[in-house]
Image (cartoon, rainbow over all chains, first blue to last red; front, side, top):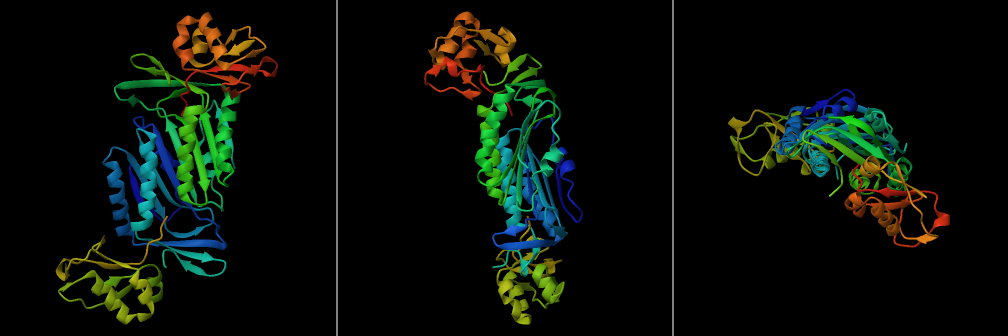
Length: 135
Length: 135
Length: 79
Length: 79
């Protein structure tokens, strides 16, 4: 069942994945974004995510609606607050009758989420603090 | 840690997914293939998967090796035996430093698995039994 | 009108900034006013968008009476 | 030489079929021999591949001495 949400607790990947299993769908694609230690030479220690929650959930819902309208099921959950290395920051899942649609839409959702949804990261790197997205 | 396997028990999606979380990778794409009830007008009741196990695991390993060689992590697990509606038949997961590679390779792996790995399905449909893949 | 700030702007300037906006204005006017008050953050503001009532604003004129909430959206970086 | 069968072939014919193969043969020869023994399954056999020592065979000649295992691979349908 479609779930679109910003949370400040650990993301329960297992129950979100299971919520996408339905008899009418044969293919489920999920994407997990986790806190990575190295980006090239830069070593990250932790990341603080913040959000404009009401607007972020609205924007996520708009993205999901475009996929739900095609008869697929969608889960989009983003975590905010302080995350450690390996923590799951975002879970995107799409269940579809056929797998090509599941892959295509899951990738589209994470690509667009990263462009339009008001969530920000403050990256605590070994050398300094970096704000994501700034040029 | 890379796991390539044919199993005859339920697939533990949660622990397989968690095995793909590493500090050096930021993006994990997973694909779950489940037993679907309807394919157009045809209603499926259950599916029996069989395999030529030694060869199937070798073929899966070859597919995985092409992705592992690029520095990603890969899990490929296929279940055989009698599966009911909603049961997970196959789990493919790719963890990569960046998400585009994870999506691309996960989709490649399931596409090729369906073409080259000696696994067969006997589909018990409401109207009759169908052997997958036969023209 | 209190305008909401987020991310690096909230941390440097505060959670809101108080502006007096005319009856009609454009999204860009909001950014310009904040730039005047906080010229140190002109660079971030030049990369930011404006949200009105939790929707990204376009180039059209905005009636102040239709506005419940304004927020400045620095480049997003979720995921 | 016992040749392994799978899927619909195993169910209809049995888990193996016994063939006498010459010292050198091609993958196609294996399929033809089984077709002669089991003409009812010619249609499935025409869609099948041959695996030698757990690898798909190509068009080359195969030395019987190099063969540990032969299997017939009907169209696969995993996933």
